[in-house]
Image 1 (cartoon, rainbow, N blue to C red):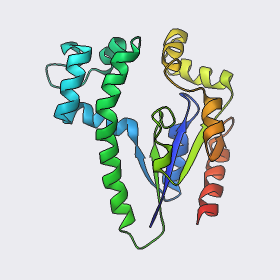
Image 2 (tube, helix red, strand yellow):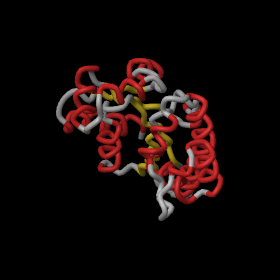
Image 3 (cartoon, one colour):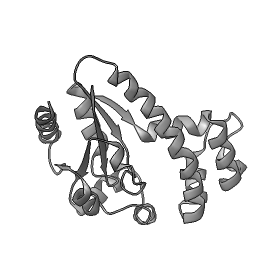
Image 4 (cartoon, rainbow, N blue to C red):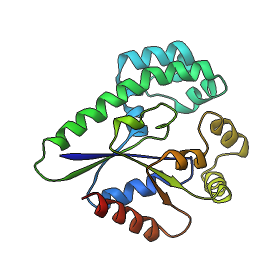
Length: 197
């Protein structure tokens, strides 16, 4: 039987590092962003919606999604963003639910972690047994995002469409603090899994 864990947090807080720690400790981990990228290029309904909302420049001649072009077209327009998300999220949920079924069929105790950046924004928290949010200071979060090549303007533009990391932490069942070394984060994940067994 699978214990389902939703993993969320603000941009730059360390969701990917936490997901990696869960994976290293034996949990089955799925990344909603990766699944989103897959459906962007493989789900006919999603492709049609994105082209209609973001324009033909959303895809290259090879059929690959040009995510930068899509982001430019929708992140400044809440209505367009919602239209695209309303097409992508059900397709993504269908995919991770299929994976959870495989985990449920296992005789052993299984932890299935789905990394979902917009967990609370899309009101998906009730679909999981446990909600975990990764948190760090605002200064460190912005430093990490800037080091990835994002500009302060891009950070602000994307933050407008998300709850603050503090709000997410308040709504979560468990909060992981990612302010220092990865080993500290992994130790917290280890404690979470040990208490859920």
